[in-house]
Length: 532
Image (cartoon, rainbow, N blue to C red):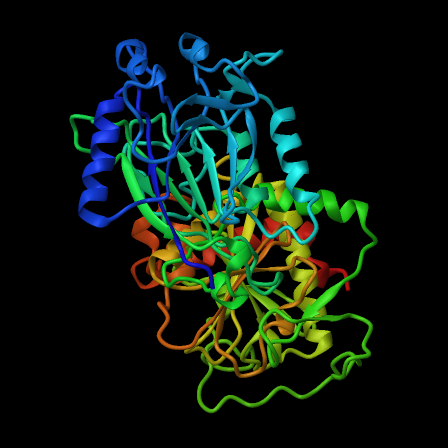
Protein backbone atom coordinates (compact mmCIF):
# COMPACT_ATOMS: atom_id res chain seq x y z
CA UNK A 1 0.00 0.00 0.00
CA UNK A 2 1.23 3.51 -0.84
CA UNK A 3 2.45 5.83 1.92
CA UNK A 4 -0.35 8.05 3.30
CA UNK A 5 -0.53 11.71 2.36
CA UNK A 6 -0.66 14.22 5.21
CA UNK A 7 -3.32 16.82 4.52
CA UNK A 8 -4.59 19.96 6.26
CA UNK A 9 -8.06 21.42 5.59
CA UNK A 10 -9.29 24.80 6.83
CA UNK A 11 -12.50 26.83 6.91
CA UNK A 12 -13.11 30.46 5.89
CA UNK A 13 -9.75 32.27 5.80
CA UNK A 14 -11.45 35.62 5.00
CA UNK A 15 -8.12 37.21 4.14
CA UNK A 16 -6.37 36.28 7.41
CA UNK A 17 -3.39 34.83 5.57
CA UNK A 18 -0.84 35.47 8.29
CA UNK A 19 -3.04 33.69 10.84
CA UNK A 20 -3.60 30.54 8.79
CA UNK A 21 -0.07 30.25 7.40
CA UNK A 22 1.41 31.01 10.83
CA UNK A 23 -0.66 28.17 12.28
CA UNK A 24 0.46 25.81 9.49
CA UNK A 25 4.12 26.64 10.17
CA UNK A 26 3.63 25.98 13.89
CA UNK A 27 1.98 22.61 13.23
CA UNK A 28 4.75 21.58 10.85
CA UNK A 29 7.43 22.60 13.33
CA UNK A 30 5.82 20.33 15.92
CA UNK A 31 4.48 17.42 13.81
CA UNK A 32 6.50 17.39 10.59
CA UNK A 33 5.71 18.38 7.04
CA UNK A 34 2.24 18.19 5.45
CA UNK A 35 1.67 17.68 1.73
CA UNK A 36 -1.07 20.26 1.11
CA UNK A 37 -3.58 22.70 2.58
CA UNK A 38 -7.18 22.65 1.28
CA UNK A 39 -9.28 25.78 1.89
CA UNK A 40 -13.09 25.84 1.75
CA UNK A 41 -15.43 28.78 2.29
CA UNK A 42 -14.35 32.39 1.83
CA UNK A 43 -10.60 32.52 1.19
CA UNK A 44 -10.68 36.30 0.73
CA UNK A 45 -12.48 38.88 2.86
CA UNK A 46 -13.61 42.45 2.39
CA UNK A 47 -10.28 43.82 3.69
CA UNK A 48 -7.82 41.30 2.23
CA UNK A 49 -5.88 43.53 -0.13
CA UNK A 50 -2.97 44.61 2.11
CA UNK A 51 -2.06 41.09 3.29
CA UNK A 52 -2.77 39.58 -0.12
CA UNK A 53 -0.47 42.01 -1.95
CA UNK A 54 2.57 40.57 -0.16
CA UNK A 55 1.76 37.05 -1.38
CA UNK A 56 0.65 38.12 -4.85
CA UNK A 57 3.93 39.98 -5.45
CA UNK A 58 6.07 37.16 -4.05
CA UNK A 59 7.25 39.09 -0.98
CA UNK A 60 5.78 36.26 1.09
CA UNK A 61 5.10 32.63 0.23
CA UNK A 62 2.62 30.04 1.52
CA UNK A 63 4.51 27.37 3.51
CA UNK A 64 2.91 24.41 1.67
CA UNK A 65 0.93 23.94 -1.58
CA UNK A 66 -2.43 25.57 -0.91
CA UNK A 67 -5.60 24.90 -2.93
CA UNK A 68 -8.60 27.22 -2.63
CA UNK A 69 -12.19 27.41 -3.84
CA UNK A 70 -13.60 30.40 -5.72
CA UNK A 71 -15.71 33.38 -4.68
CA UNK A 72 -18.96 33.05 -2.73
CA UNK A 73 -20.00 36.68 -3.25
CA UNK A 74 -19.65 39.52 -5.72
CA UNK A 75 -17.14 41.44 -3.57
CA UNK A 76 -14.32 38.89 -3.92
CA UNK A 77 -14.80 37.88 -7.58
CA UNK A 78 -11.94 40.11 -8.75
CA UNK A 79 -9.38 37.94 -6.89
CA UNK A 80 -10.08 35.05 -9.30
CA UNK A 81 -9.02 36.12 -12.82
CA UNK A 82 -9.58 32.76 -14.57
CA UNK A 83 -12.85 30.90 -13.99
CA UNK A 84 -11.26 27.58 -14.99
CA UNK A 85 -8.59 27.81 -12.26
CA UNK A 86 -5.11 29.31 -12.06
CA UNK A 87 -2.14 30.00 -9.83
CA UNK A 88 -2.97 33.07 -7.72
CA UNK A 89 0.47 33.31 -6.10
CA UNK A 90 3.43 31.03 -5.49
CA UNK A 91 2.11 27.89 -3.72
CA UNK A 92 -1.52 29.17 -3.82
CA UNK A 93 -3.77 27.68 -6.51
CA UNK A 94 -7.41 28.45 -7.31
CA UNK A 95 -8.90 25.08 -8.31
CA UNK A 96 -11.63 26.48 -10.58
CA UNK A 97 -15.41 26.58 -10.83
CA UNK A 98 -15.88 22.79 -10.68
CA UNK A 99 -13.90 19.68 -11.51
CA UNK A 100 -11.50 17.06 -10.19
CA UNK A 101 -7.91 17.66 -9.14
CA UNK A 102 -5.58 14.65 -9.31
CA UNK A 103 -2.01 14.95 -8.18
CA UNK A 104 0.81 12.54 -8.99
CA UNK A 105 -0.05 10.69 -5.77
CA UNK A 106 -3.33 9.46 -7.28
CA UNK A 107 -5.46 11.39 -4.76
CA UNK A 108 -8.77 12.45 -6.36
CA UNK A 109 -10.20 15.75 -5.07
CA UNK A 110 -13.58 16.84 -6.47
CA UNK A 111 -14.48 20.51 -5.97
CA UNK A 112 -17.38 22.88 -6.52
CA UNK A 113 -16.87 26.62 -6.01
CA UNK A 114 -19.47 29.18 -4.93
CA UNK A 115 -22.91 29.00 -3.35
CA UNK A 116 -26.13 27.57 -4.81
CA UNK A 117 -27.70 29.98 -7.31
CA UNK A 118 -31.03 31.48 -6.29
CA UNK A 119 -31.67 32.94 -9.75
CA UNK A 120 -31.05 32.19 -13.42
CA UNK A 121 -28.72 32.70 -15.09
CA UNK A 122 -26.44 31.84 -12.16
CA UNK A 123 -24.12 34.69 -11.05
CA UNK A 124 -20.39 34.11 -11.48
CA UNK A 125 -20.01 33.33 -7.75
CA UNK A 126 -22.75 30.65 -7.77
CA UNK A 127 -23.30 27.15 -9.12
CA UNK A 128 -26.44 25.76 -10.75
CA UNK A 129 -28.07 22.35 -11.12
CA UNK A 130 -26.35 22.15 -14.52
CA UNK A 131 -22.91 22.61 -12.92
CA UNK A 132 -23.61 19.79 -10.48
CA UNK A 133 -25.03 17.52 -13.19
CA UNK A 134 -21.98 18.04 -15.43
CA UNK A 135 -19.56 17.34 -12.58
CA UNK A 136 -21.45 14.18 -11.65
CA UNK A 137 -21.58 12.99 -15.27
CA UNK A 138 -17.85 13.53 -15.80
CA UNK A 139 -17.08 11.24 -12.86
CA UNK A 140 -19.90 8.70 -12.90
CA UNK A 141 -19.17 7.89 -16.54
CA UNK A 142 -15.63 6.82 -15.56
CA UNK A 143 -15.25 3.01 -15.79
CA UNK A 144 -15.39 1.31 -12.36
CA UNK A 145 -16.07 4.59 -10.55
CA UNK A 146 -16.21 3.93 -6.78
CA UNK A 147 -16.08 7.47 -5.42
CA UNK A 148 -13.61 10.27 -4.79
CA UNK A 149 -11.13 10.67 -1.97
CA UNK A 150 -12.11 14.22 -1.04
CA UNK A 151 -14.97 16.60 -1.90
CA UNK A 152 -14.56 20.35 -1.33
CA UNK A 153 -17.58 22.65 -1.25
CA UNK A 154 -18.19 25.93 0.51
CA UNK A 155 -21.86 25.35 1.53
CA UNK A 156 -22.86 22.49 3.78
CA UNK A 157 -25.01 19.77 2.21
CA UNK A 158 -28.68 20.09 3.24
CA UNK A 159 -29.85 17.40 5.72
CA UNK A 160 -26.32 16.21 6.53
CA UNK A 161 -27.36 15.92 10.19
CA UNK A 162 -30.05 13.30 9.50
CA UNK A 163 -29.37 10.08 11.52
CA UNK A 164 -26.32 11.81 13.04
CA UNK A 165 -24.87 13.46 16.12
CA UNK A 166 -26.11 16.99 16.80
CA UNK A 167 -24.73 19.89 14.76
CA UNK A 168 -25.24 22.25 17.69
CA UNK A 169 -26.84 25.55 16.80
CA UNK A 170 -26.94 24.72 13.08
CA UNK A 171 -30.28 23.39 11.75
CA UNK A 172 -29.12 20.99 9.04
CA UNK A 173 -32.67 20.66 7.65
CA UNK A 174 -32.62 24.35 6.69
CA UNK A 175 -28.91 25.12 6.30
CA UNK A 176 -26.88 24.43 3.19
CA UNK A 177 -27.54 23.30 -0.35
CA UNK A 178 -29.67 20.45 -1.72
CA UNK A 179 -27.47 20.41 -4.82
CA UNK A 180 -24.42 19.77 -2.64
CA UNK A 181 -26.33 16.91 -0.95
CA UNK A 182 -27.05 15.45 -4.38
CA UNK A 183 -23.39 15.80 -5.35
CA UNK A 184 -22.14 14.15 -2.15
CA UNK A 185 -24.67 11.31 -2.50
CA UNK A 186 -23.42 10.59 -6.03
CA UNK A 187 -19.66 11.13 -5.66
CA UNK A 188 -19.33 9.21 -2.36
CA UNK A 189 -16.30 11.12 -1.05
CA UNK A 190 -14.28 9.58 1.77
CA UNK A 191 -13.93 13.09 3.23
CA UNK A 192 -16.22 16.06 2.55
CA UNK A 193 -15.20 19.51 3.80
CA UNK A 194 -17.39 22.64 3.90
CA UNK A 195 -17.56 25.98 5.73
CA UNK A 196 -19.50 29.32 5.62
CA UNK A 197 -21.51 28.68 8.82
CA UNK A 198 -18.77 29.77 11.26
CA UNK A 199 -19.18 26.46 13.07
CA UNK A 200 -17.19 23.27 13.55
CA UNK A 201 -19.08 20.01 13.05
CA UNK A 202 -17.58 16.56 12.57
CA UNK A 203 -20.41 14.25 11.66
CA UNK A 204 -20.32 10.56 12.48
CA UNK A 205 -19.22 8.60 9.38
CA UNK A 206 -22.06 7.39 7.16
CA UNK A 207 -22.55 4.43 4.82
CA UNK A 208 -22.55 4.73 1.04
CA UNK A 209 -24.42 1.47 0.51
CA UNK A 210 -27.69 -0.07 1.63
CA UNK A 211 -27.03 -3.03 3.91
CA UNK A 212 -28.39 -6.35 2.58
CA UNK A 213 -29.06 -4.78 -0.82
CA UNK A 214 -25.70 -3.51 -2.09
CA UNK A 215 -22.06 -4.53 -1.95
CA UNK A 216 -20.32 -2.84 1.02
CA UNK A 217 -18.60 0.44 0.14
CA UNK A 218 -16.36 2.92 1.96
CA UNK A 219 -17.82 5.40 4.44
CA UNK A 220 -17.92 9.21 4.18
CA UNK A 221 -16.74 11.61 6.88
CA UNK A 222 -18.27 15.09 6.68
CA UNK A 223 -16.36 17.88 8.44
CA UNK A 224 -17.48 21.51 8.58
CA UNK A 225 -14.83 23.99 9.70
CA UNK A 226 -15.16 27.37 11.42
CA UNK A 227 -13.62 30.66 10.29
CA UNK A 228 -9.87 31.10 10.74
CA UNK A 229 -8.81 32.88 13.94
CA UNK A 230 -12.37 33.06 15.34
CA UNK A 231 -12.60 34.45 18.88
CA UNK A 232 -14.77 31.53 20.06
CA UNK A 233 -11.82 29.18 19.46
CA UNK A 234 -13.94 26.87 17.28
CA UNK A 235 -11.88 24.42 15.27
CA UNK A 236 -10.92 25.80 11.86
CA UNK A 237 -7.99 23.55 10.89
CA UNK A 238 -8.25 19.78 10.46
CA UNK A 239 -5.28 17.44 10.00
CA UNK A 240 -5.58 13.92 8.60
CA UNK A 241 -3.68 11.22 6.72
CA UNK A 242 -5.12 9.52 3.67
CA UNK A 243 -4.01 6.80 1.26
CA UNK A 244 -5.56 7.35 -2.20
CA UNK A 245 -8.46 5.03 -2.88
CA UNK A 246 -6.74 3.75 -6.00
CA UNK A 247 -3.84 2.44 -3.87
CA UNK A 248 -5.87 0.85 -1.08
CA UNK A 249 -6.62 -2.78 -0.41
CA UNK A 250 -10.36 -3.12 -1.27
CA UNK A 251 -11.08 -4.97 1.99
CA UNK A 252 -9.46 -2.21 4.06
CA UNK A 253 -11.26 0.49 2.07
CA UNK A 254 -14.76 -0.79 2.87
CA UNK A 255 -14.22 -1.52 6.58
CA UNK A 256 -17.13 -0.04 8.56
CA UNK A 257 -16.29 1.81 11.79
CA UNK A 258 -18.27 1.05 14.97
CA UNK A 259 -20.06 4.42 14.94
CA UNK A 260 -21.16 4.35 11.27
CA UNK A 261 -24.69 5.66 10.58
CA UNK A 262 -27.23 5.44 7.79
CA UNK A 263 -26.69 7.68 4.77
CA UNK A 264 -28.26 11.11 5.42
CA UNK A 265 -29.17 11.41 1.74
CA UNK A 266 -31.13 8.13 1.62
CA UNK A 267 -34.12 9.87 0.09
CA UNK A 268 -32.01 11.33 -2.73
CA UNK A 269 -30.35 7.95 -3.34
CA UNK A 270 -33.73 6.24 -3.33
CA UNK A 271 -35.16 8.66 -5.88
CA UNK A 272 -32.10 8.19 -8.08
CA UNK A 273 -32.37 4.40 -7.81
CA UNK A 274 -36.07 4.59 -8.69
CA UNK A 275 -35.27 6.66 -11.77
CA UNK A 276 -32.64 4.10 -12.81
CA UNK A 277 -35.06 1.24 -12.20
CA UNK A 278 -37.60 2.82 -14.52
CA UNK A 279 -35.00 2.66 -17.26
CA UNK A 280 -34.08 -1.00 -16.61
CA UNK A 281 -36.14 -4.20 -16.96
CA UNK A 282 -37.58 -5.30 -13.64
CA UNK A 283 -35.99 -8.28 -11.92
CA UNK A 284 -36.81 -9.33 -8.40
CA UNK A 285 -34.11 -10.49 -6.00
CA UNK A 286 -34.29 -12.34 -2.73
CA UNK A 287 -31.68 -12.43 -0.01
CA UNK A 288 -30.10 -15.53 1.42
CA UNK A 289 -28.82 -14.85 4.93
CA UNK A 290 -27.58 -18.41 5.35
CA UNK A 291 -24.73 -17.51 3.02
CA UNK A 292 -22.72 -14.33 2.64
CA UNK A 293 -24.59 -11.32 3.94
CA UNK A 294 -26.26 -9.38 1.18
CA UNK A 295 -25.66 -12.01 -1.52
CA UNK A 296 -28.52 -11.97 -3.99
CA UNK A 297 -30.24 -14.91 -5.58
CA UNK A 298 -32.60 -14.37 -8.51
CA UNK A 299 -36.25 -15.27 -8.07
CA UNK A 300 -36.11 -17.87 -10.83
CA UNK A 301 -36.14 -20.77 -8.36
CA UNK A 302 -33.01 -22.33 -9.87
CA UNK A 303 -30.61 -21.87 -6.95
CA UNK A 304 -31.79 -24.46 -4.46
CA UNK A 305 -34.43 -24.03 -1.82
CA UNK A 306 -38.06 -25.07 -2.02
CA UNK A 307 -39.86 -22.88 -4.53
CA UNK A 308 -43.23 -24.40 -3.62
CA UNK A 309 -45.64 -22.29 -1.53
CA UNK A 310 -45.95 -23.18 2.14
CA UNK A 311 -48.35 -26.05 2.69
CA UNK A 312 -51.08 -25.86 5.27
CA UNK A 313 -49.84 -27.13 8.59
CA UNK A 314 -51.33 -27.47 12.02
CA UNK A 315 -50.01 -24.77 14.30
CA UNK A 316 -47.92 -25.95 17.28
CA UNK A 317 -49.57 -26.01 20.68
CA UNK A 318 -48.53 -23.45 23.32
CA UNK A 319 -46.36 -24.73 26.15
CA UNK A 320 -48.57 -22.99 28.72
CA UNK A 321 -51.52 -20.59 28.99
CA UNK A 322 -51.58 -18.19 25.98
CA UNK A 323 -53.20 -14.75 26.16
CA UNK A 324 -53.74 -14.61 22.40
CA UNK A 325 -54.90 -18.07 21.14
CA UNK A 326 -58.57 -17.29 20.47
CA UNK A 327 -59.76 -20.57 21.99
CA UNK A 328 -57.86 -19.86 25.21
CA UNK A 329 -59.84 -18.81 28.29
CA UNK A 330 -57.07 -16.24 28.90
CA UNK A 331 -58.14 -14.09 25.90
CA UNK A 332 -59.93 -10.83 26.82
CA UNK A 333 -62.68 -11.39 24.27
CA UNK A 334 -64.33 -8.02 24.85
CA UNK A 335 -61.36 -6.47 22.97
CA UNK A 336 -61.92 -8.64 19.85
CA UNK A 337 -63.30 -6.52 16.99
CA UNK A 338 -63.21 -8.85 13.95
CA UNK A 339 -62.81 -12.61 13.42
CA UNK A 340 -61.75 -14.12 10.11
CA UNK A 341 -61.10 -17.74 9.15
CA UNK A 342 -57.47 -17.84 10.31
CA UNK A 343 -56.88 -14.47 12.01
CA UNK A 344 -58.65 -11.99 14.20
CA UNK A 345 -58.35 -8.32 15.20
CA UNK A 346 -58.34 -7.08 18.78
CA UNK A 347 -57.81 -3.69 20.30
CA UNK A 348 -54.48 -3.41 22.09
CA UNK A 349 -54.76 -3.37 25.87
CA UNK A 350 -53.46 0.02 27.01
CA UNK A 351 -53.15 1.09 23.36
CA UNK A 352 -51.28 4.15 22.17
CA UNK A 353 -54.65 5.38 20.86
CA UNK A 354 -58.26 4.08 21.02
CA UNK A 355 -57.82 2.57 17.52
CA UNK A 356 -54.45 0.84 18.18
CA UNK A 357 -55.21 -2.69 16.99
CA UNK A 358 -53.50 -6.11 16.83
CA UNK A 359 -53.62 -8.61 13.97
CA UNK A 360 -53.37 -12.09 15.56
CA UNK A 361 -53.53 -15.64 14.21
CA UNK A 362 -56.39 -17.67 15.71
CA UNK A 363 -54.07 -20.69 16.12
CA UNK A 364 -50.77 -20.62 17.98
CA UNK A 365 -47.95 -19.23 15.82
CA UNK A 366 -44.91 -17.49 17.25
CA UNK A 367 -44.01 -15.17 14.34
CA UNK A 368 -44.89 -14.15 10.78
CA UNK A 369 -42.09 -16.41 9.54
CA UNK A 370 -43.91 -19.46 10.99
CA UNK A 371 -47.27 -18.76 9.34
CA UNK A 372 -48.76 -21.12 6.77
CA UNK A 373 -49.68 -19.64 3.39
CA UNK A 374 -53.43 -19.38 4.09
CA UNK A 375 -52.87 -17.59 7.42
CA UNK A 376 -50.37 -15.23 5.79
CA UNK A 377 -52.89 -14.50 3.03
CA UNK A 378 -55.49 -13.46 5.59
CA UNK A 379 -52.95 -11.29 7.46
CA UNK A 380 -52.38 -9.50 4.15
CA UNK A 381 -56.13 -9.00 3.68
CA UNK A 382 -56.43 -7.49 7.18
CA UNK A 383 -53.51 -5.13 6.47
CA UNK A 384 -55.18 -3.95 3.25
CA UNK A 385 -58.53 -3.46 5.02
CA UNK A 386 -56.89 -1.49 7.87
CA UNK A 387 -54.98 0.68 5.42
CA UNK A 388 -58.20 1.61 3.63
CA UNK A 389 -60.03 2.12 6.95
CA UNK A 390 -57.39 4.39 8.48
CA UNK A 391 -56.95 6.39 5.26
CA UNK A 392 -60.71 7.09 5.32
CA UNK A 393 -60.08 8.71 8.72
CA UNK A 394 -57.10 10.77 7.51
CA UNK A 395 -54.49 8.45 9.00
CA UNK A 396 -51.66 6.14 7.92
CA UNK A 397 -50.70 3.04 9.85
CA UNK A 398 -47.38 1.78 11.19
CA UNK A 399 -47.09 -1.95 11.83
CA UNK A 400 -44.42 -3.66 13.90
CA UNK A 401 -43.64 -7.13 15.23
CA UNK A 402 -41.23 -8.08 18.02
CA UNK A 403 -40.36 -11.78 17.81
CA UNK A 404 -38.48 -11.77 21.10
CA UNK A 405 -39.71 -12.86 24.53
CA UNK A 406 -43.18 -13.48 23.14
CA UNK A 407 -44.83 -16.81 22.33
CA UNK A 408 -47.76 -15.73 20.12
CA UNK A 409 -47.50 -13.50 17.05
CA UNK A 410 -48.80 -9.97 17.63
CA UNK A 411 -48.75 -7.52 14.72
CA UNK A 412 -49.15 -4.13 16.36
CA UNK A 413 -50.96 -1.67 14.04
CA UNK A 414 -50.89 1.97 15.15
CA UNK A 415 -52.57 4.78 13.18
CA UNK A 416 -50.81 8.14 12.81
CA UNK A 417 -52.65 11.25 11.52
CA UNK A 418 -51.52 12.18 7.99
CA UNK A 419 -51.06 15.82 8.94
CA UNK A 420 -48.86 14.96 11.94
CA UNK A 421 -45.85 13.55 10.06
CA UNK A 422 -44.87 11.86 6.80
CA UNK A 423 -43.95 8.20 6.36
CA UNK A 424 -40.36 9.39 5.80
CA UNK A 425 -40.46 11.18 9.20
CA UNK A 426 -41.66 7.98 10.87
CA UNK A 427 -38.95 5.92 9.20
CA UNK A 428 -36.27 8.44 10.22
CA UNK A 429 -37.53 8.36 13.81
CA UNK A 430 -37.15 4.57 13.97
CA UNK A 431 -33.66 4.63 12.44
CA UNK A 432 -32.44 7.57 14.56
CA UNK A 433 -33.72 6.14 17.85
CA UNK A 434 -32.34 2.71 16.92
CA UNK A 435 -28.89 4.22 16.36
CA UNK A 436 -29.06 5.99 19.71
CA UNK A 437 -29.51 2.56 21.34
CA UNK A 438 -26.94 0.80 19.12
CA UNK A 439 -29.66 -1.16 17.33
CA UNK A 440 -28.88 -1.86 13.67
CA UNK A 441 -32.21 -1.26 11.92
CA UNK A 442 -31.85 -2.02 8.22
CA UNK A 443 -34.14 -1.14 5.34
CA UNK A 444 -35.14 -4.18 3.28
CA UNK A 445 -36.59 -4.12 -0.25
CA UNK A 446 -40.27 -3.22 -0.45
CA UNK A 447 -41.00 -6.21 -2.71
CA UNK A 448 -39.38 -8.72 -0.35
CA UNK A 449 -41.09 -10.77 2.31
CA UNK A 450 -39.95 -10.94 5.96
CA UNK A 451 -39.41 -14.70 5.58
CA UNK A 452 -36.64 -13.94 3.08
CA UNK A 453 -34.46 -12.28 5.72
CA UNK A 454 -35.50 -14.18 8.86
CA UNK A 455 -35.49 -17.92 9.55
CA UNK A 456 -37.99 -19.70 11.84
CA UNK A 457 -36.86 -19.38 15.45
CA UNK A 458 -34.70 -16.28 14.77
CA UNK A 459 -35.46 -13.39 17.16
CA UNK A 460 -36.10 -10.13 15.28
CA UNK A 461 -37.86 -6.76 15.30
CA UNK A 462 -39.66 -5.64 12.17
CA UNK A 463 -41.42 -2.41 11.09
CA UNK A 464 -43.67 -1.94 8.06
CA UNK A 465 -45.21 1.31 6.83
CA UNK A 466 -48.41 1.34 4.80
CA UNK A 467 -46.30 2.52 1.86
CA UNK A 468 -44.69 -0.94 1.81
CA UNK A 469 -41.36 0.28 3.22
CA UNK A 470 -39.81 -2.14 5.73
CA UNK A 471 -37.15 -2.01 8.46
CA UNK A 472 -35.58 -5.08 10.07
CA UNK A 473 -33.32 -5.82 13.04
CA UNK A 474 -31.99 -9.27 13.88
CA UNK A 475 -31.93 -9.52 17.67
CA UNK A 476 -28.70 -11.13 18.88
CA UNK A 477 -28.73 -10.16 22.55
CA UNK A 478 -30.89 -7.95 24.74
CA UNK A 479 -33.59 -5.80 23.14
CA UNK A 480 -35.84 -3.12 24.70
CA UNK A 481 -39.32 -4.65 24.85
CA UNK A 482 -41.12 -1.32 24.41
CA UNK A 483 -38.86 -0.02 21.60
CA UNK A 484 -41.46 0.12 18.79
CA UNK A 485 -44.07 1.68 21.03
CA UNK A 486 -41.57 4.17 22.50
CA UNK A 487 -40.56 5.41 19.03
CA UNK A 488 -44.18 6.03 18.04
CA UNK A 489 -44.95 7.70 21.39
CA UNK A 490 -41.96 10.03 21.04
CA UNK A 491 -42.16 13.74 20.25
CA UNK A 492 -41.10 13.06 16.64
CA UNK A 493 -44.27 11.03 15.89
CA UNK A 494 -47.35 10.98 18.16
CA UNK A 495 -45.87 13.09 20.99
CA UNK A 496 -47.46 10.88 23.67
CA UNK A 497 -44.44 10.03 25.88
CA UNK A 498 -46.71 9.25 28.83
CA UNK A 499 -48.17 6.31 26.82
CA UNK A 500 -44.84 4.65 25.98
CA UNK A 501 -45.53 1.81 28.47
CA UNK A 502 -48.86 0.01 27.94
CA UNK A 503 -49.05 -0.93 31.63
CA UNK A 504 -49.50 2.74 32.50
CA UNK A 505 -52.34 3.11 29.98
CA UNK A 506 -54.77 0.25 30.71
CA UNK A 507 -58.34 1.55 30.83
CA UNK A 508 -61.24 0.24 32.98
CA UNK A 509 -63.19 -2.61 31.33
CA UNK A 510 -66.33 -0.51 30.56
CA UNK A 511 -64.14 2.01 28.72
CA UNK A 512 -62.43 -0.80 26.75
CA UNK A 513 -65.83 -2.26 25.82
CA UNK A 514 -66.99 1.13 24.56
CA UNK A 515 -63.85 1.58 22.44
CA UNK A 516 -64.29 -1.92 20.97
CA UNK A 517 -67.95 -1.23 20.05
CA UNK A 518 -66.97 2.05 18.35
CA UNK A 519 -64.18 0.35 16.38
CA UNK A 520 -66.43 -2.53 15.23
CA UNK A 521 -69.09 -0.04 14.05
CA UNK A 522 -66.61 2.15 12.12
CA UNK A 523 -64.63 -0.79 10.69
CA UNK A 524 -67.69 -2.72 9.50
CA UNK A 525 -67.71 -1.30 5.90
CA UNK A 526 -64.10 -2.44 5.48
CA UNK A 527 -64.32 -5.80 7.30
CA UNK A 528 -64.02 -8.56 4.67
CA UNK A 529 -64.74 -11.22 7.34
CA UNK A 530 -68.39 -10.09 7.41
CA UNK A 531 -68.68 -10.62 3.65
CA UNK A 532 -66.66 -13.81 3.12
